[in-house]
Length: 99
Image 1 (cartoon, rainbow, N blue to C red):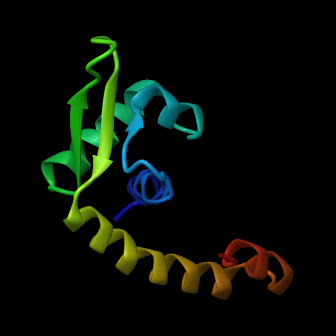
Image 2: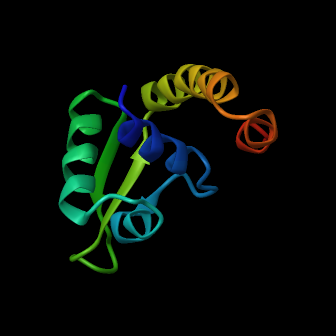
């Protein structure tokens, strides 16, 4: 899993409602809108998230993690934190792996 895919899963895993508007997700990411769309499409084709139309605004799309996406995120998060701890100076790794 690439960093972009992990970041999308990580942000969605932290959403209390279980879903997020694509526009809101894009506002928190370093990816362009087209790069985010491609990343979401890959994750959707892998069964890790789902897209759905917003019932109140037909221009908006919601994305949400599937059960498989939550499981993949949990596995990847462990690896992500371990790599950060190995690669970053101690004071930065402590901050990055907190929570």
